[in-house]
Image 1 (tube, rainbow, N blue to C red):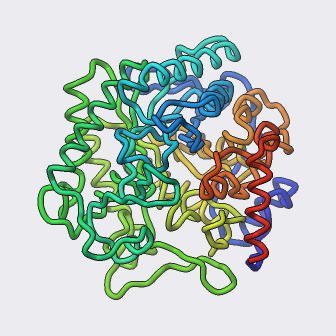
Image 2: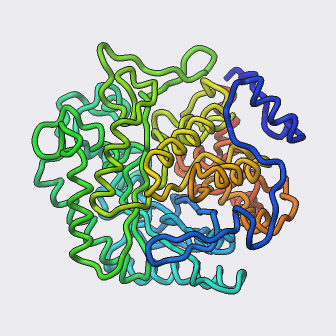
Length: 481
């Protein structure tokens, strides 16, 4: 692949360099030069969600490792990752990782899955996270831990990492081919959807038994919940109008409320989507075209390439009507347009070079979240896409909080590389540049090739594993291809 001429973040040595580059590129991001510490510092301030006080403004986003046992129980690698979330200092743990509600909905054979067989292990892992946090930070009563419940839908691969077994809501003119199915591939029936709804409800009741404070009903990244939101062409009660496209979530929420005692509910939402991108000239990503209007990008206009927040705001109103106020904002999908959800300079093995400066993607998602927060101030918004900012992350994060552009700052990839960056920021310690995430996508390239995920670039634990040697060989063969 050719290299695109965008400035890398580490080359922007000073705050003046960073702000000048933003101006040069006409990129709008808030920025504050001084990031104070102490209990009254903006990023340290507690906030209230219903009857719970959450101790600071950082959130650990769900990060999978493709490393559980095949029966859905956590492995030692899974437990280590959750413990590191606990020692991060973040007071909101959004799901910790995507947890399948059934075998058929697993995105890979080694995905975490909750059922009676795995319940005790998952409960123990949650307890270990909380105890690790308490031992490092003195208390955990202001720690809010959720479990992200998911069904992978068209991206289900429950039995082999390299064999798709899609469960689709509708036939998609581009994505069907991407997962190796034809236009006549059967869609889920209404009865099958009702069965999946009951699986989500059952999973939530188990999550409450395991001690989780809330569950996230995942509606992002191209997975099943997200696909319902673009099911314009599906007939019947689960497609067509936005009300129908939201029915899947509404029935899950209603069932959870009837089956649990005090379990909170949140939604991680792709607040906008774009069409699938693929590698084109010089390896740069370009959108795949279809004839006519593009109907399949929730939160975008008919071209699919411009954000239109109207439907997203209506959907947020539906959530508010159901007394759901906790939303984690993300965008797109890692499978077909990763640059809009996790901006990076270097793509994974099946990806493409960025079609724009990755800072454009960071700003797009931060500002889109801010617009929703401004127009729906009663909602609680957790932001995403901060990791690419690297050493300038604290300065943008603080400015987002002080400007009321979001309520909490979500960190994903950075949590694999440098989980205690949160504690360092809150204590005004200099950031350890040797541990800052490089956004080189190794944590995606590895599982795309059947290896466990982790930070092979920055975490000595993963660099010492045999998978690191295999990963280097895979990357070398790709460069020589």
